[in-house]
Length: 133
Image 1: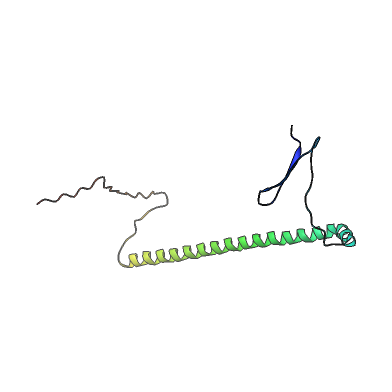
Image 2 (image 1 turned 30 degrees about the vertical axis):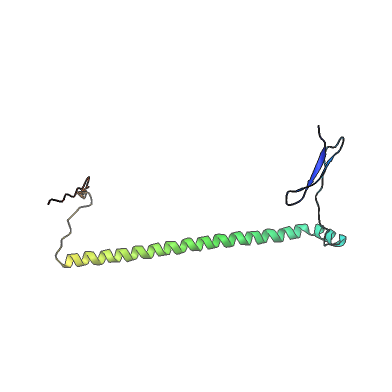
């Protein structure tokens, strides 16, 4: 069994390979030096809950802003839909009044009577063009 380690660079090239007897694990991760002094680190640890609350509030504001934007978008779409429907209804009413003034009579229907519409659909199955000399 080969116990040991291999070092690679960021490009994937092997830098070093070593076999070590009874080698089990190596834990290494390069970390840059902290920019904070020990006093500043203690201060951050002490006020961590306050910072956490502040960041949580910022997250909530962002979520609510996104929800408000979505709701305003939906309201705008509903308003546009209602405006379109009113426009179409007024056009239909105008066309109906115009047809009635030109002598067209609407069929009389009671509330209990069904209105039957016959629909005829023609379908061309095959079309041939023949030229006769």
